[in-house]
Image (tube, rainbow, N blue to C red; front, side):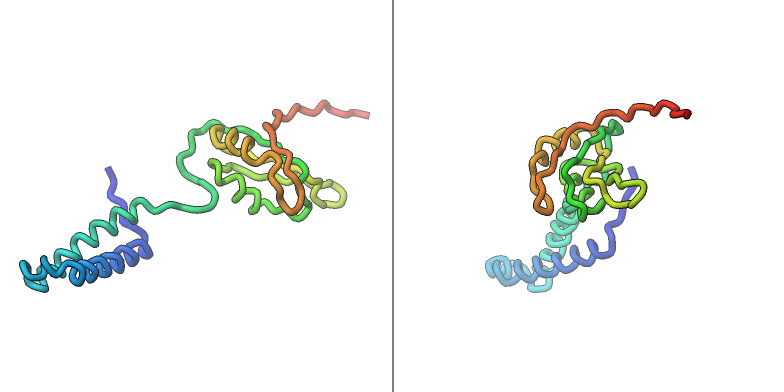
Length: 161
């Protein structure tokens, strides 16, 4: 088992939380203050606060696209009726609420390079099913998304003239 040290910002947050909890304990529990010397109570508060801060730092929740806990199996999702101004980052964040997003492709016209109004999201299988159910019909930039499971791409036949 490897020991991972928290990020510096997490450590700083834990330290601040420990001091705040120690001060709160010192002023909110005067009964203990009579039993223990002030410095002992403060040290006890720091220790308890530090322990709670480490536990809370370990439980920190991430917002935005999910990038961990990947099961390996992926599904392709078709997203239609996209507004032309929809971005890859925006779709990644929207679908990332439901699972691990592997890739986002917004299809463009070959000649003009303008978006064609649809795209494909590749994501972890369990999250893909939840995203399809939740996002089909959802409004994005004034347009209702059409979200369903994407079909596998069929190989093109050689078009010799």
